Length: 160
Length: 193
Image 1 (cartoon, rainbow over the protein chains, first blue to last red):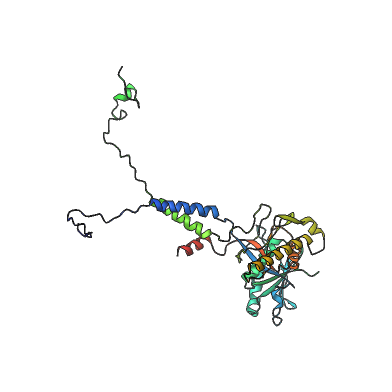
Image 2 (cartoon, rainbow over the protein chains, first blue to last red):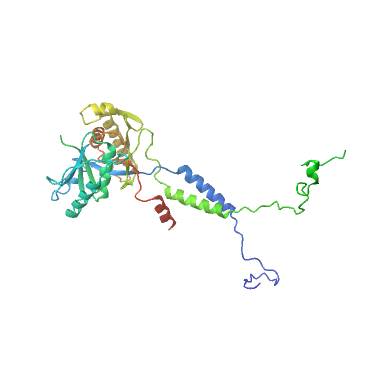
């Protein structure tokens, strides 16, 4: 055979074919078992967690460093305010929602980025929340804070 | 009348037909049909990769019910095993037992939920005893997962958080749906690489 490899069978006329057939049946069996196992043990909902601390509690991150001005985000039903230390940053942001009813946080994001540039060492923020605020809105704000590199978020009720 | 073998019998008119009488082809078809298994194996491999990309070793930590619709977030960490306080639109539930009603919590001005605190303290005691008995050197971390319905008001949530804090569970985690900072396609691509 031209170009073929001599397998050393001893007989010049008879040579084994080089394209060996792989038995795929055990492979398919293994695949079927793996797929069954994975489907049975699959968790279809992807659930995560947002870690927060209660302001004033033992894990409150805002109490760690007194030298840096504390950042407070006041989340009310109608508006959002951000303050650095005692002074409020800009005007109150009215709480607007999209067609799905989700809180729009573009302006909050801009302000948080501005604060991040001004005080890069501060990574803690307190979210003061009004009693009537929905849990979904609070989670969106916490998520935004973490996304804007304020990973130590503490939550407290709004002072009345 | 001659005995005929069982089988198809054409009518007299069709029996004369060259095509329908079955005499047009004398070649026998092979009974061994080759099945193409390459696409089958390809499909299996894709399914296995997709399922492995979605595989979660932690399993089901939360008991998902239709009463609780979790809010979604994108900057999330992986959920860890910890006591779960479920807050539905009607009840606050700890380990499958209702410890308070949301309507009552919305009405009262107290912060503490006594029954919830009691159950959490029991949980803390059990955990500490287990760690002491096992002598594994692991301390109680104070982690708690709050699985809240997205519509509950903060007035209810703050009471749950306050009770957790009072009972020694200071590391509060809100359980949320991962809205996906990474898409499934990216995860699968990473796995393949």
